[in-house]
Image (cartoon, rainbow, N blue to C red; front, side, top):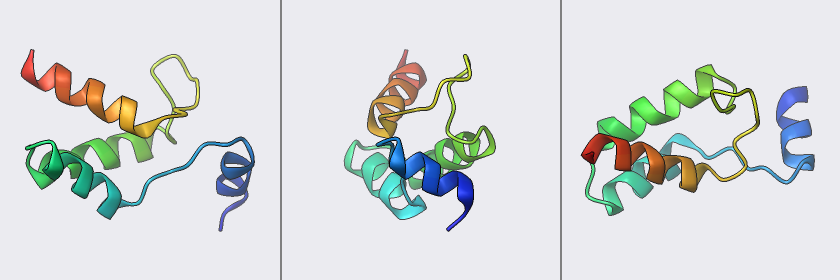
Length: 71
């Protein structure tokens, strides 16, 4: 486990696995590929928001992502 990942876990945040994200998107009737896009996008930003804050609740971020796709 990387040093950054250890700090992340100590802060109470949990980084999801790709399979967790895929399952979450598919149970909300979205394509698995959309879950992949979400996962790799947020991984590229080190799971930080557009303001630089850590994403503490990835499921909430996923819900917002899905809402933006629908609206």
